Every structure is written in C-alpha cells, then in structure tokens.
Image (cartoon, rainbow, N blue to C red; front, top):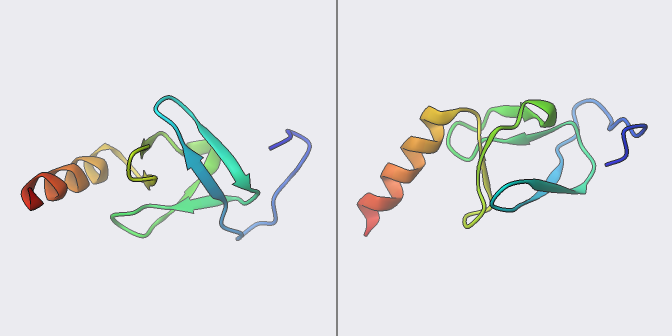
Length: 73
C-alpha cells in the first residue's frame, strides 16, 4: 500500500503472509485474529503464520493456535 493511501476506517484488508513479511492484496485498516476474532490494525500486526495464512493479535494467540494444531496430529 502506498503511504499516501489511507484505507477507509473500518474496512478489513486482505493480506498475503510470507515467512518474514506480509503483502496487502486489498487495502484496508485491519485484519482479524484467527484465534480471537479481534481486529488488528495493520500498523500493529506482528504475528502471523505464512503456511496457514492467518494473523494473530499477540504471541499468546499464536501459541494457542500452534498448540491446537499440534494436538490434531
């Protein structure tokens, strides 16, 4: 997203996650945590899983998802 572009407040972004970064596919102000459903402003997004293409609100949520996925195996 261009720094000059400001997404509409309240719009959810579509994001493609890679191992070390993410790329905004559709402009928006936030993404949703895959565990809690909370909105995560893009400028605060720090935790995601590239293989699952999921975002997490914090390290605890990421750990909960990982633990749940391991328990399935």
